[in-house]
Length: 428
Image (cartoon, rainbow, N blue to C red; front, side, top):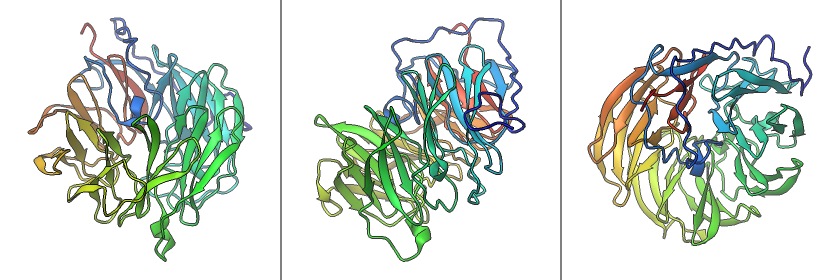
């Protein structure tokens, strides 16, 4: 039986059959000018890339450079660094939690490591997994987070576990969700449980807690309304970094170096999942389940700025799970049930509603002049943005898509419930 830290395949749960379907043509070279997609929603944390050319059409046999089946369950998004793709995964019952590293060029599995073996696990929501938080990969290390079950750092070259931290125990009541964020020499994790709500900055070298900040929101009596699962967004405003972190009934801005709160805005909503997006001094935040709204908030305040810094609020057709995405001053989003909208970022007015069909959990990405919406039915709708956006392609893969895709050079990396794909158009 494997022990935590063993670098054998996770059998039987992660018994991986690498099925490299390398196309006859060589993979396109990666654009060195494009920053690595090494964390949730990529460089900048907003699902955007500067890639100029991305594939518009694909299926199981067309424009698939390789496909590698991966056992176990996980909704963590693929991240890419130094020629490797990383995902976290777990046994269905949560009794083993691990990380898998695939070669970017071939799809071959290079590492499969069991990181934690919890003695007891909470029941998770039917839409969740025990490996939903997305890893972070940088500077020869991979950071994985499994919520209450622990956070760890691995050497990306050897797969060796360098440190573990299992001090941040909360009651998720639904399973882990928020992904870690890397800032300088800190790994920042969000812990919004039914019992405790806080953020913590871990030393990337040791895993020790450097700071820990409790949420300042006054909570409602029912503990279930205290939970949240959103990944925070790092921004810079007038030369100063801010960590924008939606939580239950309140969004907070923190100093990522110290954890000190800068400002907050009150709303009504919990079980927040969508990550915020930001442009030109304004952050756009989804308020959570049960009547979600999209709020536009100026980030130049301090303290409680609920009455002074909220520019507009939008109700209806606001996502409960997928994050919004910005493009040329417009906010694009898809509600869980497949209705997409284009919203003017300045006025908060909808300019278009687009019925994509299907259900959605993954957050959209943009590149090559298009938006990509991946559905739970395995279909990716490619949308041409604009005040009146339209679908230009619909591409189906086997297995549902719950993880947000990654973009590397001219390739899209998609994780389905069954496999990881590298998709690109040869010769473009």
